[in-house]
Image 1 (cartoon, rainbow over the protein chains, first blue to last red):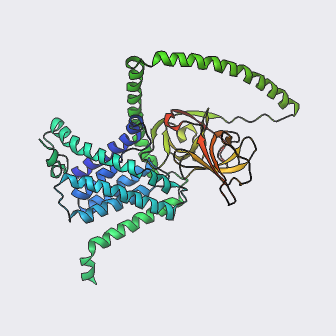
Image 2 (image 1 turned 90 degrees about the vertical axis):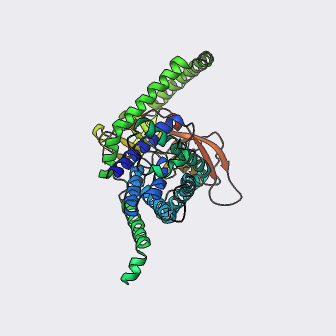
Length: 178
Length: 272
């Protein structure tokens, strides 16, 4: 339960950062998708049911602050989580490089699901063109953000709350540890 | 059968979850104009935090630009003085136009345009993804804001309210791909629909034989049921008539700088 609350707290913080800080700090419209990184991370570390619930909840949370369709990001993040969860057993999940690779694949999958849902279910004009046009910068930003989080979060945790462990992160932070 | 279910339990469960998510998504599509309880609650809970972060950022940016970053100030001062002189000249010309307009109005017995009451609001957050164009404002249903109300700034149309919580609301910007506004080309009254393209707009359904030129101003036609007539949307930046087809392709640069959106006006009107 503590882990779920920790994830929920992190999810809300990520959404707040995405809606307020990034729009001021970044000089362009594209911003890193921190929640996607969190979902990929959940896919590598969490179990099927808990992860699915969290992925859908985070997606709906994102929907409140993004676009006009409640449930769209819920669907895309759930698909991303299930895809990562389904393939994670074929890889070495101890490697942090896997998270970066999965973030790369997750961004592609998220865009594909978004385009499919928008084209088949909604009259969303040229949304698919906008998504395709911004795919490359989005990929680069997501990878950069994942790298920064992998490098920074374990350090922050060791510095400020050394008596606690970030849920599940000990498996992936060995590469960046001291 | 049970054996088969056990064997493929995880993929089956995953499929069911995706199907359920798809179902919820399509159910929500039907209730799109309404703000759900979940959305209201989340907007309500996060608004104070968003306001706090926004104020903190504002304070830091203000301190930085007023006390620490003064290199550009002198040059900016000179530019503003020049601009001020030019604008004074323009103001004199506009005063003449206004007087002439007043005379003509009374002469033709035009009805005075009914001004809608406007509610000032502050933008406290932007869309959390890179794909859509929405903002959150700090006024909601308690202040009289409802779904469907137009949002404007002095430069022109900004968007319309799509979700409304008691103390905050979400605004769909005209540049979002799912936004469309009924428009007119001001010079020759050509009708069309302006659809969002992310950073710019596309004027659709403008007949090929209509004379639209780069630089033409595009305004709202007032027929869409959201925006009042005559609000500026932008200027034509490109026209492509192509070799065939019924319509021409027209791109429009928005009049509003959406990257610097801070204060907006919500135009309130009677509930129909």
